[in-house]
Amino acid sequence: MAKYKKEPKRFDQINVIPFIDIMLVLLVMVLTTATFIKQGVIPVELPEAKASKKEELKKEINVYVNSKGEMFLDKEKLDASQLKKRLSQISKDQTVVLRSDKESRFQDFVTVMDILKSLNHEQLYIITKE
Image (cartoon, rainbow, N blue to C red; front, side):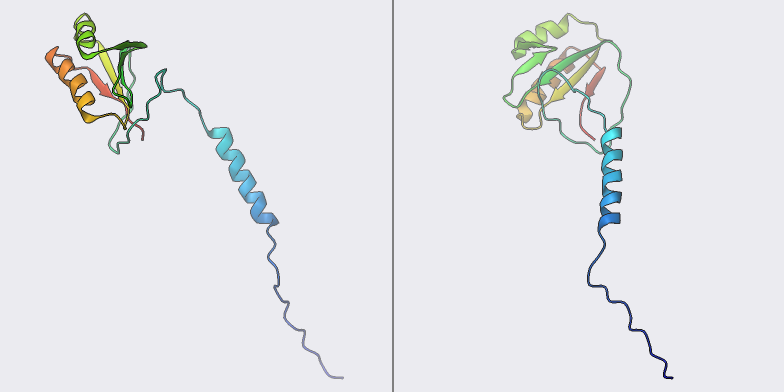
């Protein structure tokens, strides 16, 4: 009797079911761990910074500059002179948080910074995305 060799099994197709299972598990993990945080009331697209550090902020004043160059103090729309007048009424130790849209003109950002510097505000945070 002659011994017959078995032919090797051919791989004509790939079983994708385990791959789909793994991808679904990863998708579920991402969706369950994702947090959705509302940044603020005024819609601004924040620029990115690599060397940023999150800190706990207490009693903060929010200054927004949107993509059109409009300035807001908390929710109130102001021009540069009104903003300076309102910021002069707050304490120098008060934390000021600046959220400037990445599409806004750099001059608008510099205007707000100049106002804060002229009023000797040193508690300033510039918010960016990581």
